[in-house]
Each structure stands twice: as C-alpha cells, then as structure tokens.
Length: 295
Image 1 (cartoon, rainbow, N blue to C red):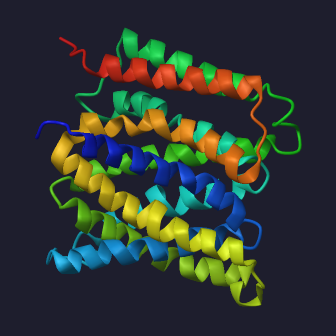
Image 2: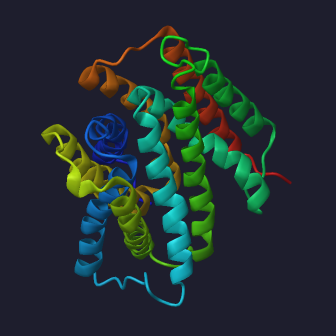
C-alpha cells in the first residue's frame, strides 16, 4: 500500500459524507415513494455507474453465470432486504436515529464473524467494544422524545435491517475470488430483478405524483450513495487497504446526525449524543481488538 496522503483522507471523508447523506435522502424520498420503490430505484440507479465501470475496464459481469445463485442470494440479503427495511423504518423515525442504529453494523459483524469465520474470533477487548456499543443503542431507545410506542417498531426494523448487511458480507466471502466490481454489478442486477415486480405489484408506482425533492433524493441515493460510493470504496481499498477504509465507520454516524440537523432540522437530544459517543467508542475498541491475534 502507498503512503497515506492528504488526498486519501479527503476521499475517505467524502465517502463517509456520501454514505451518511443517504439517511436524510431516504427520509425525503419517503415523502412520495413507498419503501419497495425506494429500494428498487436506489439499486437500479446504483447499478448504472458500476456496470459502466465494468464495461470501461472490460470486467466480465457474471450475474447469469454458473454462480448466479450466489449473486442472487447476496443481492437479496445485502441489498433488497436492508434497503427495504431501512426505507420502511425511516418513514417514522428521524434520519439521525437511523444513522446511529446503522452504525451498529461493525458490532453485529464482530459477533457473527465469531461463529461463521475461522480467523475472526471474539476476544475480551472485542467483547468490551460490543458491550459498550450496544449499550449505546439500548440507551438510545430510552429517548422518549424521539422514540415512542408509535415508532419503536420502525426503529427496531432499521436495526434489524442493518444485520442483513453483515450476513450479506459473510456470504460474499464465498465468492471472494471474484473481482469486487463484478460482484457488486452482479448483485445490483439481481437486486433490481427481484424488486421490480414486487414494487409494481405492491406499490403501483405509476399512480404516484411525487414531489421533486423526493425524486431528486431517490436518484441521488442510487447514483451517489450506492453506485459512486461503492466505486470510491474500491479505489480506497486498492490504494490504502482495508484498515484505512474501515475508519469510515467512525465518521458515518457523526455526519449522519449533523446532516439530519442541518438539512431536516432534526432534534439532537443529549441521549442521541451519548448514544453516538458510546457506539463510536465501541467500534474503536472492537477494531483495536481485531489487531490482537488469538493463540
């Protein structure tokens, strides 16, 4: 890996901003579109830049190869389910809450990786990080200003949706010998195929009279927060490695809370701040624990 430069930190921050901006844009998209339609169009528009890159780099897309069932399965678990569940939940909660809840992904990954991988076993330091991080999530649910009996189910749905990102990531290890661009393009294609008929059947999008801001947000979600963000992630991974790219996990919830406040005037309560700090500390400790090799 090359020596880290100022440009690399700029790109990492840009990636965090793009991913964090997804939350308030999902909220705006829900003003006009149903969760199935949001998930479908996000995946559809996200596929365009990735497929274009594969064409330019002459990377073969194997969506319909002999391994199609892996791409289809990962597409459903890693894209269809979380995109739908997050859009469904964000209808009734603030986008900044979704950003913090989604930040639990590295913590969930630590637990599942212990059981489903050979070299990612949990240790005392990781356990401490998971405990602190999830304590922050539990504490967040005690915020009666933002979470009530009317929307607690929606908050749980978002938290549940984050788990599918982790499961999808574990399944991706089954095809880790394939190029990232090929895998991403293939699962985006399958995600679009699965969601199109579901969206048409359940939400009849042709009857919509969407707001302009919802449509712009939805297009942004696909092209930037899905397609461009994945390409930027590939670039950072290639030039700076996984450890450097993983630092984006600290920035996303912070930017998500700030953007929700600036764009949507969302409330930031003391419990939101405390929960955010606990989750970030938990992620930090987990990553420190990852560096400790078990004998």
